[in-house]
Image 1 (tube, helix red, strand yellow):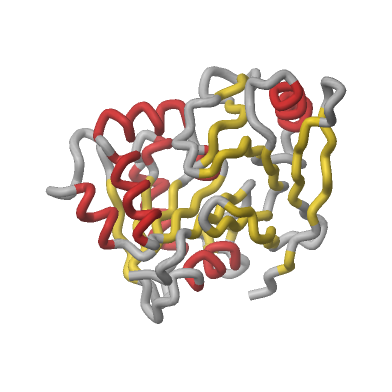
Image 2 (cartoon, rainbow, N blue to C red):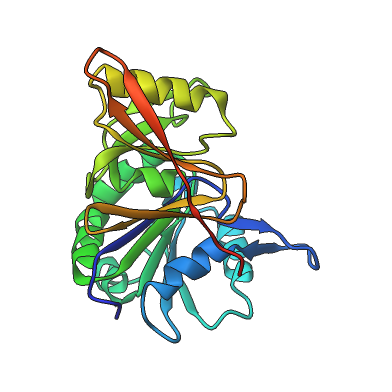
Length: 244
């Protein structure tokens, strides 16, 4: 198992990308960065696609994305029933858990129903790296904004709150995101927090933001703080560029 520290890698988008050579997806260097945090030569990588309703096609694509990587890949589903006898034990056996995008509201409802939120917190405290994109990034925070309820974004503050911050994802690709996050932080619906462009990951050790990493030279991370006069201040964070 893992490094002994508690790591979370919250990705704004871009965990996977189309292959130049093949018809399937490739895992981006963001996921190599997360796997390296485990400290294992052949890490156990657990995939969770709860936010997609455990979509079998998407799970298959994720498996394919790690073809040729020196990782031991498995997955956990809850539809129509858990696919492993003891989901908590499965979670604790992993070195890194990767959570896909999709509906974060549905994801959290199902995790709480099955006790997976408690198991994931236990794993995080034990040193399992928690990672994910979009819904799989929001879930570790207090909340953010989501299209779980329809195409018009809504404020959502029902996350696990392992990280005591708000989170913004797809920050440079969806024009609704920045405005709503600013308004919800300014109005006190969400705490101050961090946001990530496409291709950018937010790395936390414990509850402390350590750095941002990116596969897009033009991607950035951001810190959003209240300004004391009813508004917010946004500070751009220069990420470290990952090249392989």
